[in-house]
Length: 101
View 1 (tube, helix red, strand yellow):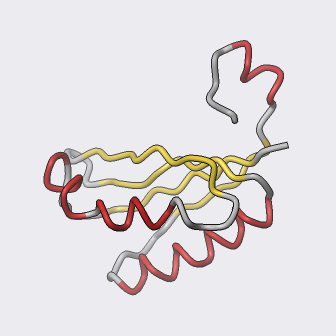
View 2 (cartoon, one colour):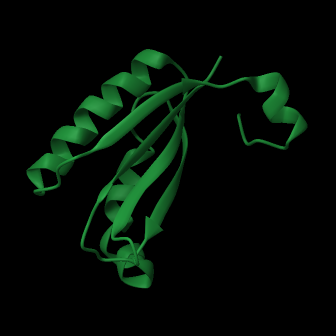
View 3 (cartoon, one colour):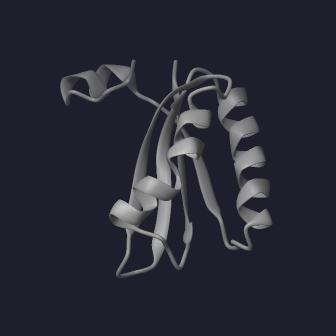
């Protein structure tokens, strides 16, 4: 079974191309975190929100990452971090072409 972590928070930017350039090293480092299968980066410049959706091998990996990532975001001055962990229903997700592996 895999686990989905959804994280979102308010952020003043950067967004778009500027965000892509500013966070390339962070994006690469996420691949080295225990249990990470993939991440989809999310952003809404109009609402000043950012975050991501991650797939992890275990619930423990997702929980550990959320704890570490929340502390990192707080060190950047970001507060009101919303993180949720869900079990992935693989059978139904496969019907809808979900990238669960």
